[in-house]
Length: 377
Ligand code: SF4
Ligand code: SF4
Image 1 (spheres, rainbow, N blue to C red):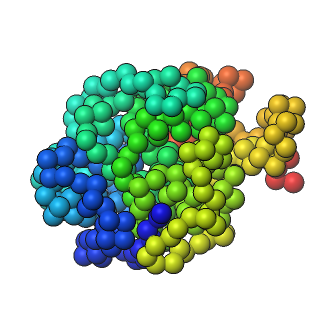
Image 2 (cartoon, rainbow, N blue to C red):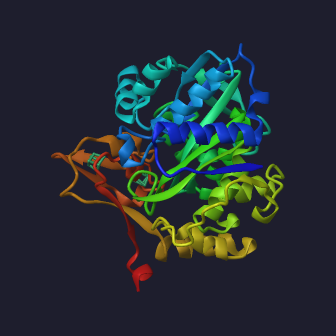
């Protein structure tokens, strides 16, 4: 079941009303006990201000914390492992820029500054046997994931399932791209991770979303909703409909269905609350190879993949005029194929696995997703 609430702004009063409605529609109080340790996990990808639309808005996080406090919960921590280094100074800067520092100040919730992680066996793992998971997630009695609706250059959708990638510490994340360079394997790993973390509740900030080349370099779009579910898979099914994608186009959803974890199709999904706003023209990322392959019958995909990779795929391209030589792209590149020389970054293309971590992490949006000229014909 997914609850939908029309939410037209980040006004604190409107946000509190929306969160209250989700709690009532899904009877979320039944999941809570006052003595619980609760971790609220927003999407804090990189150091951006709330109005840049890359991170979960602090108004939603604040409203959720206040509602938990109303239910008697006192031990609440805000935690995420953004991209880049997982250090106290990095976290402090991101908490400040994203408005989480203010959210914690206003509510009395804690901000996680523990940068340890624990190797945790994967629950029902198919692709990854274990994961290093950040301490506040492991130690929580209950995890509330608060994702942001964004398109995603690699996974297609940044929603409930993808948000949990931030439970893996800092620069360990690019390792997973290196280990699972194929989109299918990477998305199967994300399902293993989702099963391991098992957030009890997933909220989605879809008031202002990101379309195009998300999750950090797309365009903002007013989509006027907050959504909530106890199933991150069902939430993502609803988000698929919102952004006008076929559910089988999004590999995490397809994988969850194949494993029998997500039993529903969108038509079988129970929506409660307001009507779902759908945006059939929601811009897709320019990374189209996944879409081509999804149209090819499964048994032909191994044959089709080299053709798609060579002629129909997209690649990261550095705009040297915009590049400020900060090195964030090189730091997050799992293939170690970016060099920063004389203040400018350069990609050695032959070694690129097209994970788009560099595109995601560039603070000045200097890395574009460039289509093969054939795609523009
Ligand atoms: S491309 Fe972006 S992330 Fe890489 S060095 Fe240049 S400014 Fe930094
Ligand atoms: S250059 Fe960018 S897209 Fe290519 S492997 Fe490195 S991070 Fe991934």
